Image 1 (cartoon, rainbow, N blue to C red):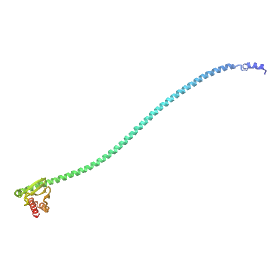
Image 2: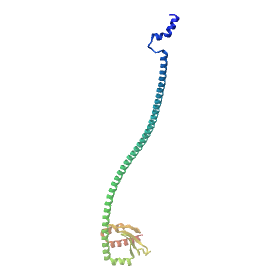
Image 3: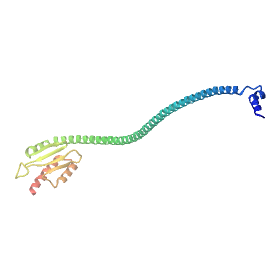
Image 4: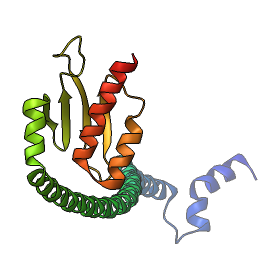
Length: 248
């Protein structure tokens, strides 16, 4: 095709070939306009998406912060619960120990109570035995007093004779103990005292002290416990003191 033909066809080929289509310039402008609108809408869409993502991110960060705060609070509550549980466990252990100690104390108290009850029964029995012994001694002493009074009334003239003319004195040392004092035995010292102390609290008489000591005192006391002749016993003791002076 010649240059002239190409020029002719170049300027009119679109019209000649596609008479129903709009021109390229018109389509480009329209597309450019639409692309501009699309770009604006796309930019707006992107902006909206960014804002939405930013809001979602902020909400997420806020939610994460709240969750962390909740987690911290929950952790704190868990620690507090653990501490409370620990204290309660310690309190339970202390109470268990206190219960064990209380049970041990109760057992010891029961044991002591049983021992004390046994001791009480023993002491009550002992008191009863002692009371019976005391009562028997009282009865014995009462009988001895009656016998002594009866014997004294019978031998009163002789006793008065000894006290007045043979220098013998009878003194009460303490309950049921008599001190018999003789004088005018030693020719070298008429005022020298010869004495003995006799225990009347028992059925069997007993000389607990004798001055000067007599070798025959046990024999004389044995005779007294056999015959129960108290005034005869006094005579025998005086004779024994006299004999001890003569043999010295």
